[in-house]
Length: 286
Ligand SMILES: [Fe+2]
Ligand SMILES: [Fe+2]
Image (tube, protein in one colour):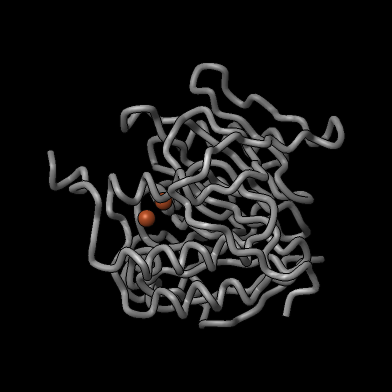
């Protein structure tokens, strides 16, 4: 159980007005680093020594963001490499925090271009880094793609990267991908939740304390990127059981607040709308 205030349910995402409450940095160390003026790539510390590297992209109307997360510890970990084409940009951004060659772990939620596209470039730049993902992802994709053998984690497996104990949760098809998994930093209660709560837009605050479900539901209606799996509710409840206080989304702002309530509200929203979409998905409409 979480050692926090009781879980708060909100009244339905459709009716709420979003006013982003950006979280102000506490110190100069937490202030943003503009890593690349040309691309707008920036680096922000979103939890203790967890850096969000964000590059805005003009791939959908209104823009989109791709985030990699760098966890600075004795064995630094990168979660999501970003697209291969972004490699020089992401590399430059990591270099603002630490030498890239110090990376020891490079992984991602599931095997797609934005999660793993630049993996081999990073393995070249960080010769002691081990690629990682779900066991099934290693079997189906990673060990074929990667230039070095990958480590496949089983559901619930924990590993230390120095002072932090990380936990891997296998979340097949949530939101998509047979190989999908989620990483949790138990020391800061940060859930690296991959494509869950994907928000559109290019100019997002790095961290928000405003709920991100409304924006991500708008994205889901536009793209239908969930796999319509039967186990979704149970998996989201399992993630809620971790009591996350930061949701490190791969697309959009990171969310700081009652992660339990937000995950449960997502589950309830998906349950309520099972089998329906208010508008045809973009790929279908195109
Ligand atoms: Fe994805
Ligand atoms: Fe993604």
